[in-house]
Length: 204
Ligand code: MN
Image 1 (cartoon, helix red, strand yellow):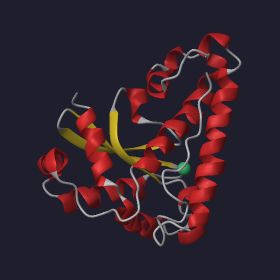
Image 2 (image 1 turned 90 degrees about the vertical axis):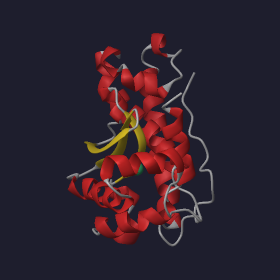
Image 3 (image 1 turned 30 degrees about the vertical axis):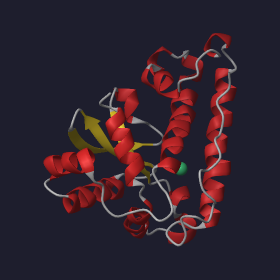
């Protein structure tokens, strides 16, 4: 049972002008594609790992993965999980503000939506080098964290409602070194209905 790269759920140019088509194509096909290939290659070294099909469980229990492939699974499995989420929490004709229970939880946790946005963006700015900024849910309590490399919060038993990729490969072609400009533009493609669905799914 090998992991697979799902097609992007919209055309490569669908997030223009905020995220350019070339970045989306390279990011999805080559970067995410390589994480999937490398994850499968690592797992192939251990036949007993072939039955694992749930990427979240694999990463949550990464400390039990055979030592010789543990780092490869952590990095490439994380890359697969993170990007699988990332494509779905963006969409064309998106942005704006969430509504419903997610909006209420953001208000309770951060005071107001603008404060949340500022703090989330700051977490992305403060992540030195490559990594992600995350919105974490613990029940209805939301918090912001960031992680290095492709580490997903599930490795620490935490649940990400949303995350933004701050690796240079996510923005460098269009924004060069201006990570702040990328993060500011990114709000225009945020798919709040999908993020609200993820938040609700954590309460099942
Ligand atoms: Mn990426």
